[in-house]
Length: 588
Image 1 (tube, rainbow, N blue to C red):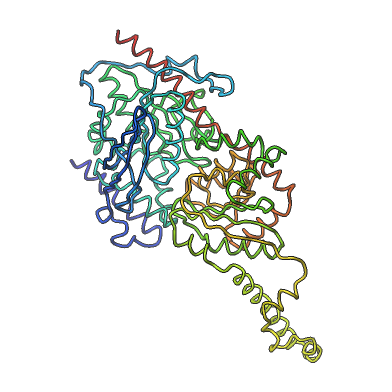
Image 2: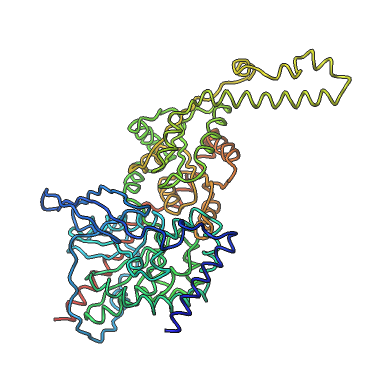
């Protein structure tokens, strides 16, 4: 129709404008949706909770875990993040249509308070079927969904959950390019910044809602009709308006109310698409997001806009409980035990440098500056560098001759000092002879590394560098570390705060990560520096001032909530159980 054609052309124009605003068009073959790999295949093994047999499957687009354990062996066939699909689907129920306009809020008036894990017993009722809506635009959304899913399995044994991306299968431009477009744009921050701020407006939001409804409504509805969930949880900003609208219609057709919850996985800033629709409850991580939701017009009652923290992995809650505070005597003893278990030297300070799952960022440069500064200042330390899947960087760090590198830098610094002295002596003619006699001539600027070392006063720090790949025990390393050096990912900051770890932020993705920097600065548990040399200077200062580190650790603990996932699931589960009971009574 003319309307659809107009809106499609509008989006194409908007994408072009974004590239022009950023400075240049993406190169052909790197960004255009038809030149990017669209399908992802993964080989995986699943084990039933009732037996030891294994089954293999290959699939696309969304992932499923049904009770028991899941063992994933991923084989990447494209540049996209691998995703898994269940071998069986719940058949859609009959399409019998019944007028059903019942609100979950009418059922849960007695359950709007946040559950207290210390006093409330763990529910012992039957398992739930949970449908998570997300997309692999960064690892944070999937990590939050998985942390919530594990809590459902823990608190409601026998639960089943599925993780679904509703946009990619539509094959409607530009929605099916969501994942590859994010990967391209996040590697080009200025282009991402242009698109983020253009799309983070009320007029763009309304046009997107109209266009996506016209072009994708039926296709998304066909997908969602394949599932029969007890509850739907969105952990992605693009999975709120249209999916929530469609689920309401499906609920009416099935004469079964299905509650819809949004868990905002951003910490300090959030895109306007988070706050659309009339969800039954919205969970946010900070007062900044809560204020933003109100300003953006979130259609949720005040008591149903709840701040509980960012859902993170259960390992952090377990370690935080055992540590009982980083600055306590018991906490210090526990941290030493963790260091021993990780093979780290107990008496050395530990700096954890992270660059994300792909090992992005100036890891090598930052690590070099940290090494040189800590050696120079006499700080004994271990620098653990998490390179993710960037094996090239990991090997470069592991095989580098750091002693030779330090000697070379010291020699270079001494030469620069001598050159400045020589220029000064040349400018002041009457002092040339005296300067020459003291050995500051041009011939003496080439000192050996041994001579330089002997000329410096004080001891040099004993510093070693450990390159780490993709890890599953990052919680242990955060407990063992004294300072985290990382980009401003919301999940990373939330995990660090959950164990009281001070943070040095080195970069952020314009838009949703900008507010995360302010969370750290306002909370007083870290700093932000782009320059690697200044990063090293500030980290070195922290490590040499125990009182400063302790104060930052206390403030970090105050900003974190290691039990956020547990509390959110407890609240969602309690509401959902009440709604299920009401549905059963209604259908008798």
